[in-house]
Image (cartoon, rainbow, N blue to C red):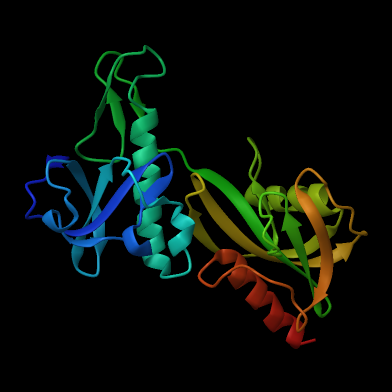
Length: 256
């Protein structure tokens, strides 16, 4: 986990990232030698492997083609996960140049993703914010909402962050009630997905409707409604946990 200055002969996949954006020339993650992309002279950190080649992180902002990693979210789940790691590490190192306790310069650990203070010996790790996301079924309908932060017509399942002192299950029940006014039951875990916007770990659940009428929280949602499984609006792209939860719920609806 040691940075090195690129000579130009190094090859692999190049994650050039700063401030939660990633360099995507021609809309793709660049691969090949450092020379091919004029990256020689930059400091680079190996952070993993993809398709048998090293994945390098360069903490830098290019003059053009800096984009959100969302642009490759639906291309390949594992590649998106690797890019997400790079984007989050770049932001972690950028925001931990100085110790939050004593103000001295930080150093990068050579053995793990961590920043170390040689003055007070405090150790910092990348922070991960746990969040929940849940598909809710009512007979042959699924609860979908338009979120205030997604003004693109996409309808998706409910989600939210876990609060201090709260279990994942408690967070699901609370978020659903706060955002929609609905009470749920039969909660069960499905899967999880790292989500680098900016540093979440999405934990996916399925649940059944128990009671209540929809009362939308206007701070979080534009709208919410029950949609029959074969008459869905625009939904999230493939390779997202939201899409998986919707598809899993559709399967259950068809069994009704």
